[in-house]
Image (cartoon, rainbow, N blue to C red; front, side, top):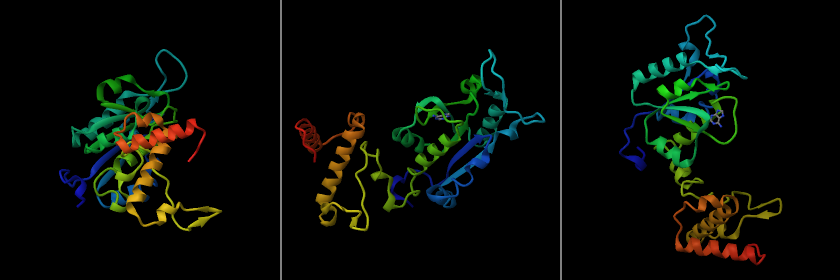
Length: 261
Ligand code: ADE
């Protein structure tokens, strides 16, 4: 048992994915961390073919938009039927529509979702889904970023991956999610492994020192420096120590004086 979340029952976290491309997920869900988590019974990831909930000969899932315009819209009946069928198993499952107009997916949102037990992920296609689906059965819309994908499938995979790695037991201690970028609100420090010299570049001396205190301080400073350079917006939300503030001030002063370090 993983000691990080003893209050969580040891049942699998269920991800149902409503899609017209169930085959899209087959290799991604067999490989790596997700594959292992599924094998260990920590997650159940179930692509559900939307066409199984159609009633016409052509198994139609889309139609032309009322009001005209380009593209097709996903029809409401099969989507609502699919969600209702899945909710029969667990009426409390959270229904998420992957959509570019949703709330932007962040580590914080992944943490919130990881506290649930069952997500039903609807992968939109074409121009979108009939708005009545959103009104009637969707609890939450999520976007993985400000760009448009050709469908919600890659976005569903992103959400499943990010949520799964936060579940107890999914990552071993050696690859703990606690040290990931964003888990403390900062970008992660650089990593090095063998060889010690590579293409004229050496591993920073401090990492070879065996002095764990110095190493931790170096890593923290690298995290702060990278975050300041690349994502200063993140620093506004982080709980910084006095020492962190001093270091950030130093970097800013150095930059003003034209020094780098
Ligand atoms: N479907 C199309 N684009 C998307 C995005 N950026 N996020 C989530 N789902 C999408």
